Length: 149
Image (cartoon, rainbow, N blue to C red; front, top):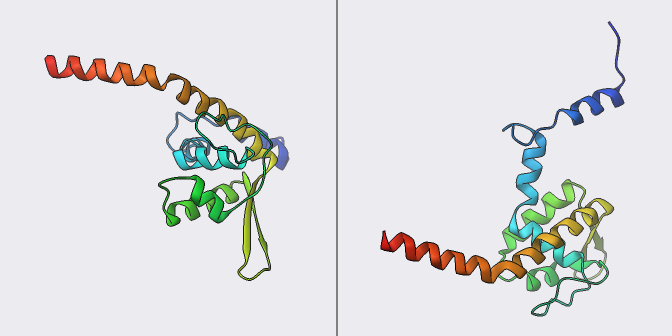
């Protein structure tokens, strides 16, 4: 019987990831990264902070303080923002840096892994903004058909 190294075992496990299986770790990750707050946090950290109407979150990634993120993400509760940031840090998508000031200054920044995900999420965010009028028209047409029939 041949023995396998730890690296070979990890490669074998990686080849077996299947998001269609309920207990697969990749499904749990997909669930996490498809959350709206994750998408918005990644968009905020991956841009230059100019989030005016119509901006596509372009610019250079930059660290943001907790309070800046809280202001940018309209509607997020303190609890949800904290939980989401902790989960992203645990997954290695962001780093948290605390600076000894009074009060303590905490900033969050994308890691290389987080930046690679941000690139994909930016496309998704852009798609949603570009096609929103079509989706609204389709919803209205569906609702009209549903109430007529």
